[in-house]
Length: 436
Ligand SMILES: NC(=O)c1ccc[n+]([C@@H]2O[C@H](COP(=O)([O-])OP(=O)(O)OC[C@H]3O[C@@H](n4cnc5c(N)ncnc54)[C@H](O)[C@@H]3O)[C@@H](O)[C@H]2O)c1
Image (cartoon, rainbow, N blue to C red):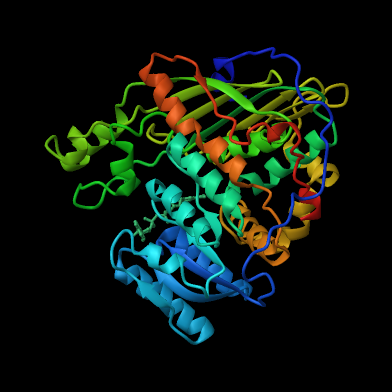
């Protein structure tokens, strides 16, 4: 096996999860648009993701699109052309600057708002949309600060509409299969998980002229350091472990390497006096250890700088009964003959939710995940039910952004992870994806 990352830690961990308690979806809320045939959406940020969701939603025949918003009029124009072609009318455009979205979200002919802007905007845009009683489909992460997390929780608790974090990695086939196996008790008592977002993204930091894109600005910001993108990793793992639903993240500690790659890349491509060559970049790689209330340990890694082929999935899970490793395969104690291919387990353990929608999801991005998030969001609005990745999951996973930064600045000092559920994690049940 490609083992060096595995040797980072060999933990024995202690007691943890008992058999999962499955229950029906959380309490329904009243929301506008519940009886509407089509769901009426507005999109803030009609860039790569926003346009992708617009196209997919139009193809699904699921939506009306009364309004689109972007600071770039040409982005709204392109989106409007798609709507014109598909539905025969042009949405109203909101293009008067970075806070013009506020005018859009209060429209009374919109049920749901897509927040598909750069990450620094996710928190405020979600809060304003929830205050206007609009369902929120938020791109990841949910927010960048602990305070924003509390603001989103408060807004969601007061809103007539629901909040969904569009964490598409939760819906990849293997991640869903592992969830199914955990819930069937195959892994026994869980002790340890590893996860990481390791996606070399040097070119995404720079425009052709060497100036920084929004990603480049973010990754060279003095305040946003550490793990700035934790939810692709922590999302699936938190679902396996029942985080905010029977267990909770209690504290973490982080260390970060020096920054080297982005600066060297910028110097080579744009010269030693370029913005990128002089910028104060985030460290190349950040490692975080997280403890859970029940005694599990999670190793979370983040690296978008180091040159290496993209590893879309970077997960392991250890329990007393089985072990999963995205690279090595699956091992069930007493049954497997060493590591076995993950695909050999599909027939028996594919998640029913994944199976039900796999055909439609086939051509969608991120291993089908991009289809599942839309399907789930629209279903929750139609049924007026709380999404399976809700506001508490969203802000808990995202809290590792500011907490990793603080720990790094304090020489790996442990940081308390807020309990955004205010104790409800003890009674919250796992979401029943098999019924979704
Ligand atoms: N889940 C995934 O797999 C995945 C993949 C890629 C990106 N993302 C996330 O999706 C988000 C969008 O990424 P993208 O690749 O589409 O970026 P993008 O740059 O292609 O699109 C962002 C759009 O937001 C617009 N915008 C910026 N500030 C705005 C504001 N204040 N009001 C209105 N519009 C504004 C920009 O003009 C741009 O059109 C990011 O948060 C990113 O992290 C998630």
